[in-house]
Image 1 (cartoon, rainbow, N blue to C red):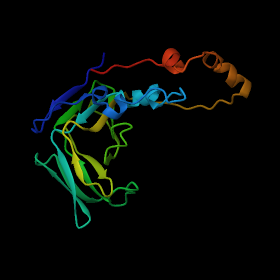
Image 2 (image 1 turned 135 degrees about the horizontal axis):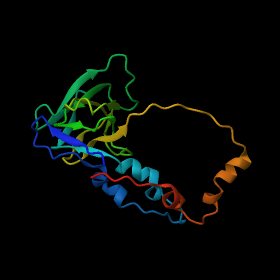
Image 3 (image 1 turned 60 degrees about the vertical axis):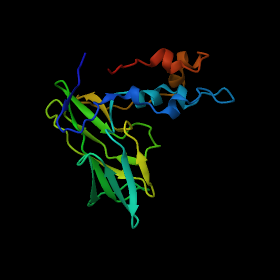
Image 4 (image 1 turned 90 degrees about the vertical axis):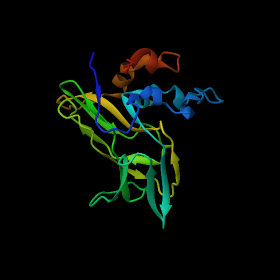
Length: 218
């Protein structure tokens, strides 16, 4: 079984990264699996769940407060250096609905992975409730594991405090492999035959029961 090592470098007294499944938000945990018409909701969607629960999340070591000064966002945090403000990224298309000036997280922890593995660094998956949006990247963490910085944008008009313990970065280990692609034409009949076993099952959980192979992180 591959092992990920989290290596402390900076000293923020930050709790270590945790399996992403442990940082699922309350709104997800409290959601119903079926609506009033007995139709499945997103809570019953395995791909949605697996996206949120795969890998690990870095969680905020302290409260982070965002506020506006003359219409421009500023940030305050009790841990000097953990989060900083930066100017607009040159020749970069900032996400719509977010300020052009951006910020950066400076985590305490580096990531070390076994040979042949990299890590995908992204915004916490499906966390559209969060007021920030990270840029994404892939790092060969079998070769480098010093913590770097992680740029992010703040939602326009947001003022408030993001509480300690909130996940702010999501990392998913991936194995480096070369791939080739091919294209196959399939008739409607062939397509229906291909998926016939699934379509004949009278269940709302065909994917969960027949397809899904759960991966666990600890």
